[in-house]
Length: 114
Ligand SMILES: C[C@H](O)[C@H](O)[C@H]1CNC2=NC(N)=NC(=O)C2=N1
Image 1: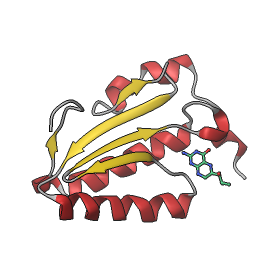
Image 2: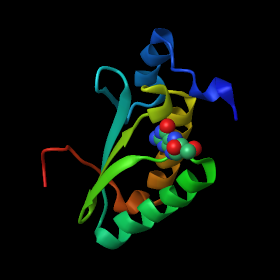
Image 3: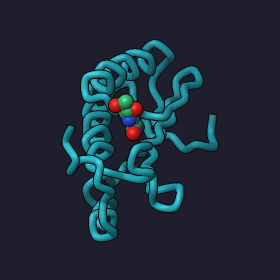
């Protein structure tokens, strides 16, 4: 068990997130990160989710997410720490890479648009 990883991020860490993870929003009183993605179609969204799911299982850190056809909404937090930890940042960076791999299929999405 890597104790350091379940330590909540500090206020200074959180301030740096706008720059280091510009595609993510701090939500839920700074205890979570959210990103909304839109893909070409359901197949592309599901391929992306499959890639992230395998990674999440390997590192035992799982996203809260929902999928509606070609859209995927992702909420990251560390339940054990009741807030954000380095584990969420690592998962967010992996998700960014997986999304970029499907770049042709990915466009920015707002949560309120279908
Ligand atoms: C027992 C298992 O290691 C824990 O429940 C893991 C599983 N995946 C997890 N995922 C997330 N997002 N937060 C956790 O605290 C967490 N804990």
